[in-house]
Length: 262
Image (cartoon, rainbow, N blue to C red; front, side, top):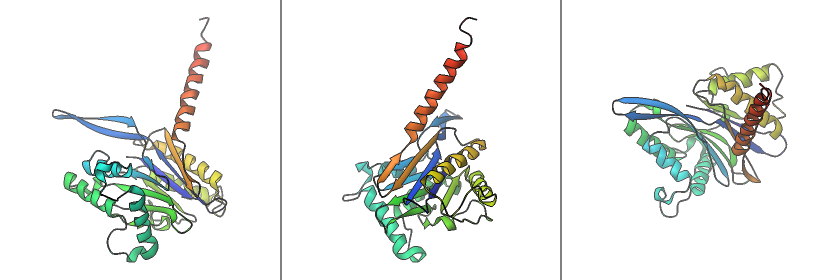
């Protein structure tokens, strides 16, 4: 499982900040004895105009094919298809028709989860997604994609039934409830001005929310962050990882230096 958060700014440069942990539990079989191990992987996939992050079982053939499609693997694309075109089409379906659109907004997500269901026969194994796009001033925004491939606006997606969202954000995954509680409490206590969510404030909120999700045993410590706006997509996962590696080495040197003459 995982912890994913997306926040849309409402002042300054119109942007969406997406953050996730990077831990995944991978199950392996050795004869009749299944075993699990934890791995650090990125749960954010990006294109030039979009960001997608996911939660659910990533050890299925259906999910594998979908992520290969997102990464532009031609083996999983029909002639004339590109990830950009299909994602833009899904957003168009929502922007033009909203809930009145007949069928799933994002057909490829629905097909992927149909394959997962055939493979696992368990609705708990299905994947959900967070989608952030900026194609132009009309086609941009933040959505939750449900198991059936429908795009859902942030105000209609809640981990907690009592949540009242005063700005656009989405929390999902095993740590989603903890993150949503943290944001709601921060708004209630006046620590967040819901009318002044700029990039700086949104980034701070993403980091703080993911830290709150760390108490979830299935959420990893290392973070991945991506930002999208009219200038394109910027990823910061490697910067975060390298900073942590450097800090760990400096701590090691500081500790060992105290015992040089011991």
